Structure formats: structure tokens, C-alpha cells
Length: 223
Image 1 (cartoon, rainbow, N blue to C red):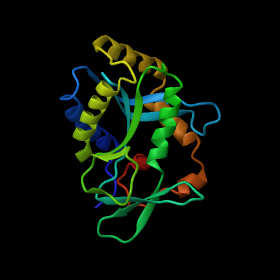
Image 2 (cartoon, one colour):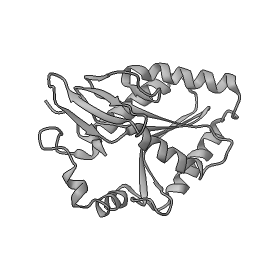
Image 3 (cartoon, one colour):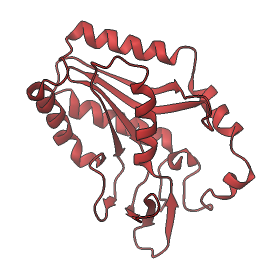
Image 4 (cartoon, rainbow, N blue to C red):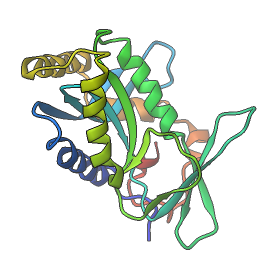
């Protein structure tokens, strides 16, 4: 039993779940996969990948999709340091520390916010689409499982239509927003992003990757 599905399979699964949840709630909907955006100067990696972007009437919703499965997900909080996140395979006592997915999603959202008009709603979630995932303890509201998606779709629809903090997007505005996102991506692609990731991965970072047996053959799901 592995603790992570191959990341491309998990991303495909997550995108399909997003489509199934959001299409009944929105008349105008576009979903982009693997949007690559430039990061500010000084960042360790020059680009960032957003696994899935939902553009609909109420705004833009970013989804960091994690390939974790058959595991308990929990975090340890400290007053002096950021929370530490762990996965524990079901049936095992040993836990594996992973990068904070909420921080990852927030960092990308902040950068994309700086590149978009202020009158667009922008929100992010961490989606855990695979089976056998359980969240332990108090988790950020942005961390969701596949069971939460229908509720999240209804929530963003109702909040967007009642709060009126941002204008609703008609079909043409949705398409314009998609085009703006593609303009931000420009000539960047997934292959270049992966090269950027490898370029900044030194021996110390390679040593911190999980040992064989904890992951399937593709470890990107833990990045």
C-alpha cells in the first residue's frame, strides 16, 4: 500500500471531481490544468505550478491537488514556528513530514493576486482527491477532501451571489479572465517548471525526500 498516488493520476482525478461538483452549480465554467506562473525575483524556484484553476461566475478558485491516499493527515502547531504537517499511513505508527500545502497554495495565490485586477475574487483550496484520506485535528478551512467538493461549490456560488463584494462574471467575462491567465503563463510550460524545480534541488533537498516504499514512483505529489 502506497501513501501517494502518481501525481498526474491524482491531478486528473481531482480535475474530474471539480468538474462534477462545479458544473451543476455554475452556468459559465472553465477549468485550467497545470497553470504555470512566474514567481517574484528572489524565489528559489522561478516558476510555480497551480494544479487546477476554476474560473466561474463568482471568480477564480485555485486548487493545490495532493496525491496523498490511505493516510491520516495532521499537523503540529507551535507558537514559535509554522505548523508542521505529517502523513501517517493507515495501519502504521510511523509518520512522514511533508511540506505545508496551505502555505504552498497561499504563496501562489499571493503572487497571482498581484498579476490580476483587484475586482476579481481569488481564493485557493488544497484538494485531497484520493481515497482513504482522513484529516485529524483542526485543519485550515481551505484543506478539503473529495467529499467536501459539492458543499464548496454551493458555498462559493451562494457567497459570490449574496456578498456582492466582487462583480459576477458573465460568459464573456469568464472567457476574458481565462485569456488573462493564459497571458500570465505566456510561453511557460510544465517542462520548464520541472527544470526549474530540478535546478534548485541540491543534495540536501534530495536527502530529505521520502524513502522508497512511502511513495509511488512519482514523488511530485509531495512537493
